[in-house]
Image: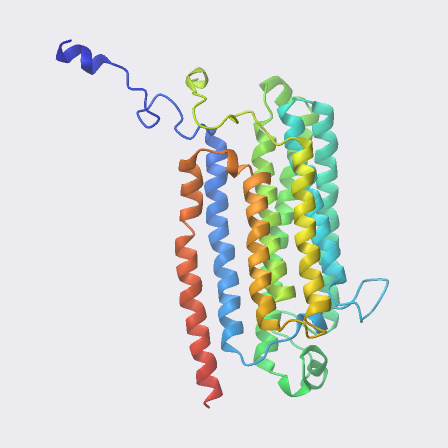
Length: 237
Length: 117
């Protein structure tokens, strides 16, 4: 065998070109890397929150701040409402995977059904968050705004724990981080609606695959993933 | 265009393999179970004094990471992707871990500083 024919030989290793080394479609890789960068943004926000909490001697107690169920109990039911919100978001994540699963089987009807369920779940979550925000706002919390020192006694574990700075940092970070997450949910719902319309129009049926459903699925699960962390650090810890 | 040259090396699942419906509901059950455990800790164990808030926090974080694993591995399908992609997406979080350690030490220092003044 001479030198020339060796050069002509086609290399077949995964990184030698000619094929996708990760066997993942381009758009999907880009979605993954966008989510990675988004995860960094959320991490930065949550890490700042952590640093603030570590630096303060006291912090508002989540069990005392979040204890109403709208329309049912004004107080005395700690964490129940956020439990419902968490359940809604996990549930909508499940309907999203089911839409992806139906997409693999190219079952247009099922994809439409599960996408509608996911969108409803998204709207329900946003509605709950709006109620949660309104409630906290009525208590006197907002960006740059906290209840009076007297009222704040209800939100700390012990009355002597009250710290105006801690309460203000809590309010600012709560609205910023849940707001940024809520904005992600909102854009997720909009994207889901676009994909739903495209599915109904038969765009993916003509294309022969439902990869777009998988891509928005990745985004939607990411939103759920972020909520898992927000929930832990704002409501449990 | 190079669709035909995709090899099926590695795992049995490739491009078109998805989760079965049974598996999806199983993962949902696990996520729900973990959340219920978190609520039991928050509403029963800690208020009744079976567990301190400090210990509870470590358990919460461990359970949160476990939930994150199930969402990323199964719902986002990362478990069935090629190792290269898995590494690219997970090893990057070394920077975040470093950042967490950095900022929490900083916060802890400020806390000591405030207690002394």
